[in-house]
Amino acid sequence: MEKQIMDFNVLIEQDEDGIYVAKVSEIEGCYTQGKNLQKVLERIKEAIEVCLEADKEDINPMRFVGIQRVQVERPQMA
Image 1 (cartoon, rainbow, N blue to C red):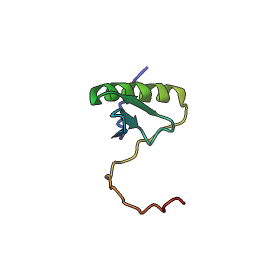
Image 2 (image 1 turned 180 degrees about the horizontal axis):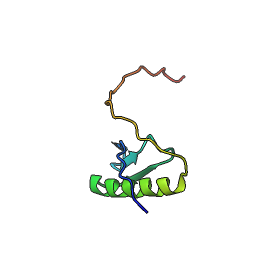
Image 3 (image 1 turned 45 degrees about the horizontal axis):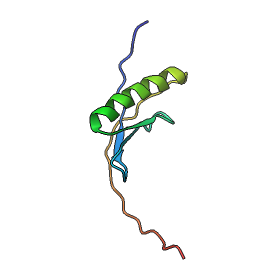
Image 4 (image 1 turned 30 degrees about the vertical axis):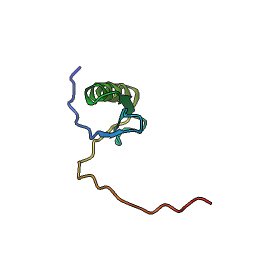
């Protein structure tokens, strides 16, 4: 079986406990976490492979455009 090389955009954030969380927006439910960047990158590659094997639909990675941080005002709770 011939293998196809695919590139995915991975969003990596750090939670309040210092854990790195990686998510692939093109694949629903494809995310993982790790204690450092190296570990989270290893794990997200594994997660992508598992998701691709499980998902029989065609997945077409999107073209990366950029990231923008947006600030909004949150109403105060009473």
